[in-house]
Length: 306
Image 1 (tube, rainbow, N blue to C red):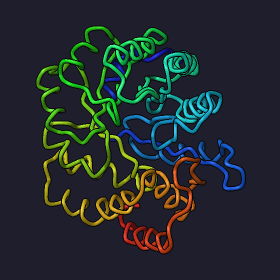
Image 2 (cartoon, rainbow, N blue to C red; image 1 turned 90 degrees about the vertical axis):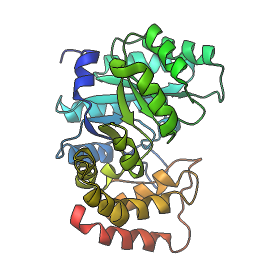
Image 3 (cartoon, rainbow, N blue to C red; image 1 turned 90 degrees about the horizontal axis):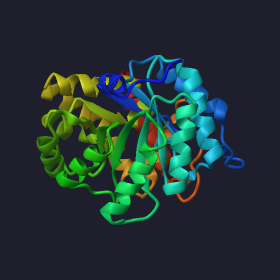
Image 4 (cartoon, rainbow, N blue to C red; image 1 turned 60 degrees about the vertical axis):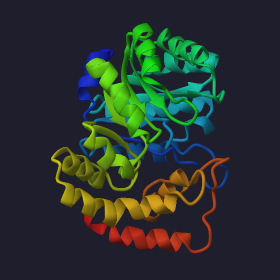
């Protein structure tokens, strides 16, 4: 299959970008690749704009380089070109370059660039980190601004000047004020993606964004698509009902502990008969007393959108 041109990839990134979890065996935390493939096949029944292999919800930073490559290859094989595959790349300068090169050779359609391991790096160091990734692939690059990577409009302009195949910015700070300033400065140079969660759809879409990354797609892809559709149509009444009935209760549970955003989603998948498995450290593996029952009750309410 020919390599996807960065601008062709950009043209496909409207709607919902889904993040399959990476299932690990409860017995020994080994990678359950067949379970992962089964989850990807289920997602392909829905019209997703792209799938991210080894993203944040996919626990990129708990995977070995070989496991990351296995996950990327499995995603490419299962999708068979039906939807673009974005490969998560992060860690540090040497490993990030190797991962970008390997994902390109494995048939990925784009690269989602995570922050490097080093917190609060100087911008010049960050620039070199992203340029190093870009030098090892001709694929379209999506920059994920999250955690300690907080970019100003001037930072983004510099990145765009020096990285021609940078095609999109995924906002993961929930900072709409800064995001609007970046969008105003850069215009259509980049594709704009709401990237911190389904609960931010109303805010993102109110400033003109029409693409978001969804972890709810791991359990209820239909709901993710409904959120995109209602928000795109500015059907605020319907969107508000979806948020109050489904999204906010789930995100409230996820916010109780650091790392719960993956732990809770995996447990919900297990309860639905999907291949969620367990998380790897340092994410919290065990739910607190009564929380599994809360998730069961929430999923019963989810029945109309599953």
